[in-house]
Length: 326
Image 1 (tube, rainbow, N blue to C red):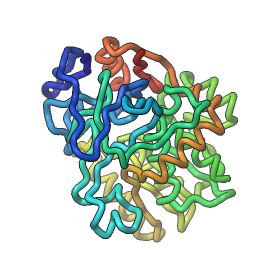
Image 2 (cartoon, helix red, strand yellow; image 1 turned 180 degrees about the vertical axis):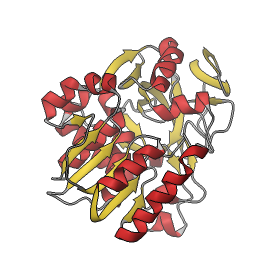
Image 3 (tube, rainbow, N blue to C red; image 1 turned 45 degrees about the horizontal axis):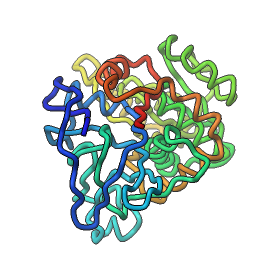
């Protein structure tokens, strides 16, 4: 079968690989759509703490079971099922977590295998491409939960990429009032149709006034600094995106931010991954607002175009790219 294989950091290409064989409790899937996210690009460019090479990438997928033809999205985690986190519905925090596309081969291929327990059936009327957004949307729902976002609250999202915009839809769906901050004018323009359709503002400069909750959907420590300073006293910052641009010269600013947290008694939380229930909720939200989410899919690709797409996504001026299979 054809697959997008990351052989080593910086070395990726489409080639022929053996078709996977399901193990106990697994099923063989024919991939219908696989969305490319910035984490995929990061693994290609920099690696990742959970990445085991060589690896077929892809953890945002919609696929058909080869045994019964039913469509599913896949919760990409494999948890132990018996620790205190798994038993309390927090399987995304399992210490033995293994992730599809990181520890095991993912869905940027014609076929993949996944645990039967990880399959979540797709509503009949939802397209393959939109269904492939279920995992990142579920992750944004986790941030809404961890940030304890309440109806009527003002929420600031720092980062106007596709996940930041998905998060804005999740926040709006919760009854809160989202504002997206994006310093890159090209990215702001890229989401113009989305802004006009949804009424969600994406601003280069933030107006006066504070926010109850701030969430970073960008990997910059400057996003953390901006979010902390724009919080109302007693507000909550939710760390959503991991930071990748640590530089010595910003050490003093980190101290200033930490002092601000201390003196204003701000609360910080974080969000990592998602649960199966959150993916089910994500599918419901995507189905309900399919027209809005469709504006976040910038390109549909064939597998051979994926390496070039990774480069474009890494450079930052892109919405979602989705690989579609016949």
